[in-house]
Image (tube, rainbow, N blue to C red; front, side):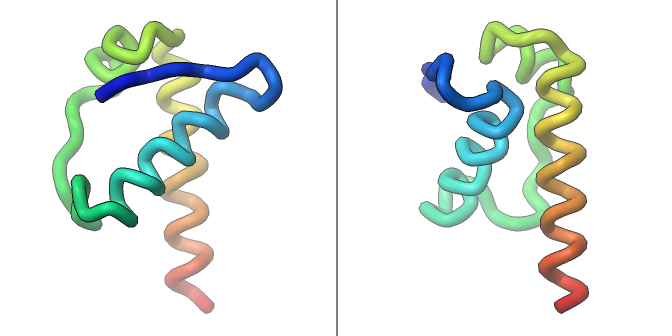
Length: 68
């Protein structure tokens, strides 16, 4: 995966968008296993806490959407 971040948008939001695009394009299926947070953070060049926040927010958004 290629990770390029803009200074205009918080990194965790950009990570969330990255995963949304991966799912929408079929590169990731809902329910697929992803690498551990530390591994993803290292690959993306971000703090593990930032990656964890992005994944947690993405999961929360998915749950809210499912409830509608």
